[in-house]
Length: 287
Length: 270
Image (tube, rainbow over all chains, first blue to last red; front, side):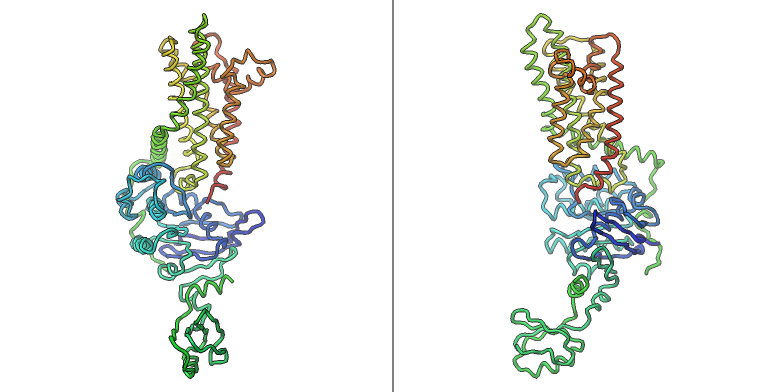
């Protein structure tokens, strides 16, 4: 069964078309990363799946039901971008208030443990750091014990350490067979964590596949080195050359042949060969 | 694409909850209501404002006029007028809470639970009533301290009637919170409260005003709050005209509120 089915979903704000006849389905159990530049339609799409925004045209189905019904039934949990917390109450009171509002919530102790909130229960919500507030939002997202979890830029404001802890706790949640959809600007997170990556631009899907499929869009290998300031575009396999400070980066369709030719130049040093990153693919797709 | 059935997680491993869906719905509403009232009544700054303001104005007026021959009677009627004024402020300020929850985006978070919009609005209205009661009671206590002596039944009837009569004003607070931008809403609430108090004769009796203003005053809910509230003291025919005016306001404001609710969901901050 599909967790999410979008059928020619369109949403416009005035003359701006935020989401343009989007068709997509997400099978249950999948972990999907939603990428796209600002204004690509990521937030509008997630809002329609959550039932916060109604599409102008097309249909949104969540586990075969309409979005609001699925939300009320406790099938969906979400972490909104910059989602607000109730002001000037303790974290404990906030959690207790929310816990009574779900159809079949996880036990409160389990929520506190999974979101690592044990240490900040007596803290006032207006004195939390960015990372702490994000953990509280995460707690609210999983509290419903949802089958579908939607996370809009979940690791914004977290340091490297918190990000790692966050994804570790996500891993244990995903193990339970939950469907997870997350939007992110950290492409490494998408690459590492998602089964599938969907790239949105101007409200349309411009790429849809696994990380390696998306990277294949760019193709070729990168060869970086210092020295050798001459023109290398004539070498075998080279399709592009770029200078980044002291380094030169060649894009090649045949890195072996390019390297053989390149090594004839004795001033070339510190050679590095790499596959194109997801970022390269992303920039190519949305440029 | 995986075709596996949903593994034993989420709903499956959740033990069945007793009770029918409607009972769970009611329990959810009561839970939200209880929590909201607790949070509201712990807001000492807010409570202090809605209680201290009308009580001190009342004591000020009683000190000025109280020395006259009909002092005790004046003190009693002024008590009802100022009680209505205090209740008005408390009722309308309930709108400031929904407004702050909206501007911060907390409202959207609530819409990601099983709480329905109707339950949310109901809970907010009852919470507002909960704040109205201490606001009126404080003025009544000040009245008693100033020598107002009434039967227990009269005190209770006056309080209960005013709480009921203030219901349209609670909805007005909600409507302002729903329709105006946060920065504007506070100003609009204060302005509307002062206008309703002045034109409705809560500060100076309507009888002392020019005829045109009396006509306006009789169309305002604030005037009828004090009229209905003082009926247990005066006796005579019950002011049913006032009930009609209040019901009219309630219906109109409820309609505006229903429209504003959809507006609020769409424009609340992301």
